[in-house]
Length: 75
Image (cartoon, rainbow, N blue to C red; front, side):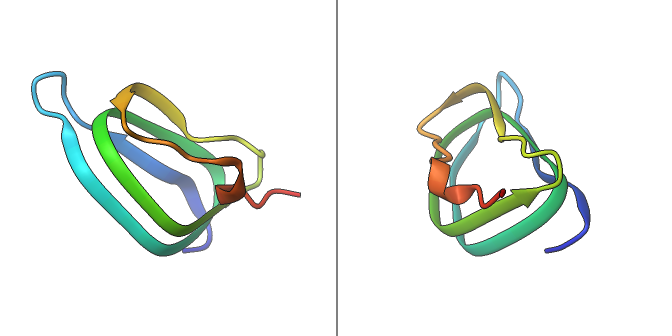
C-alpha cells in the first residue's frame, strides 16, 4: 500500500481486545506509522513499513506485539 496517511491504526476496547492478528507479506508506505491500542498477540511475517516522518508504531495497552527494527525501512 502506498500513499496512506497512517500505516496502521487499530483500536480495540478495554473490554474487547483485538486478539491473534496475523500480518504476512505486507509492505506499507505512509506519512506516519500510526498506533495500536487494546490488542494482543500479533504475528508479523515479511512486513515492512516506510514512513515520511520516520516514526514507529506506537503501542498502548498491548501485549505480545513487537515491531522489530527490521520492519522499518526508513533511510
